Image 1 (cartoon, rainbow, N blue to C red):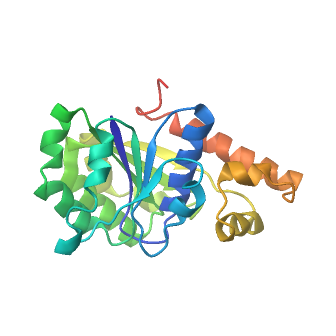
Image 2: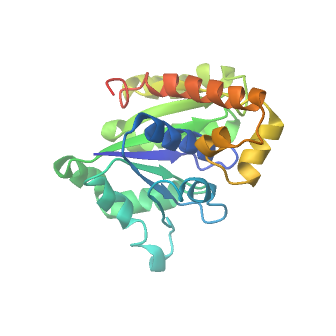
Length: 234
């Protein structure tokens, strides 16, 4: 089964929005999956989708008392597609969990495929973390680099980063664009009211333009998801 980690240790790059759109994609397409939210400070993915699909909480931490807390993620991936929203500052705890448990070594025989979806805003810190992720996990996982246009429309620094582009080619990383949901008011309402995208579309107090924007956003996101190897043949 597929274990999809929505990654980038830098906060504020839009990981949770990408994760929520992936959850909505699976709901709309009728593809079963299990979700995890490991953001302890703001588990908004759990709040928005935990009422309508299986979403669980997990803690990835270097503290020994939490060393087994994330094991359910891998165990569920033995029989289900699993999508995980990772928090900021997770690079080292995630590395420790994977390496200490030799997950990349046991995954092939267990039938688990790791997919790292790295959500980028093309900022300096984001690019450094992307390079570190590609360097560390190499071809042991499937890499998808998500250019999040909800955070910026300038990805020149990513496109011209020679080391990242070289690593991306070497490890056959895929690039996709993630669209911006137009309208700050509608974005804020969805966030503050902890609404799934499906719930927002069902609300009578959302206007026609608002719903048209949401449908356009989802349509573009789904189209770009389906260019990846993971969904191409779905």
